[in-house]
Image 1 (cartoon, helix red, strand yellow):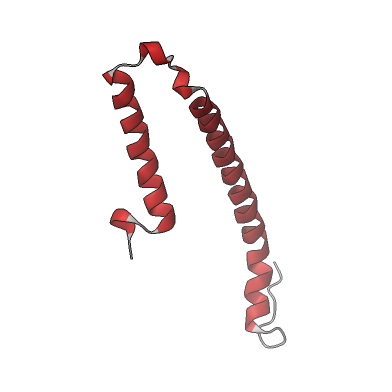
Image 2 (cartoon, helix red, strand yellow):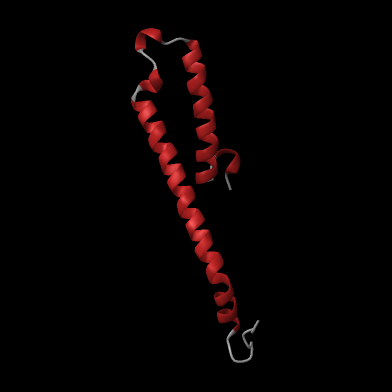
Length: 89
């Protein structure tokens, strides 16, 4: 294997050459994760638009508890994403 000559090639370029496949893989993984999150958000929005599948005549405290649970999980995510709550800086 031929290694680049650090004398004839700037230090930053040596690392850039080595890191490009890693950056491309990271970008592909990032885009895939974003697509997964976008899909989950779309499904949650559709479920919310349908009142989480509950008919107004059937609502009871179990439904409230379920939504409180969902809200607490989403709050953990939004707190982390926006640096709020326990993640405040």
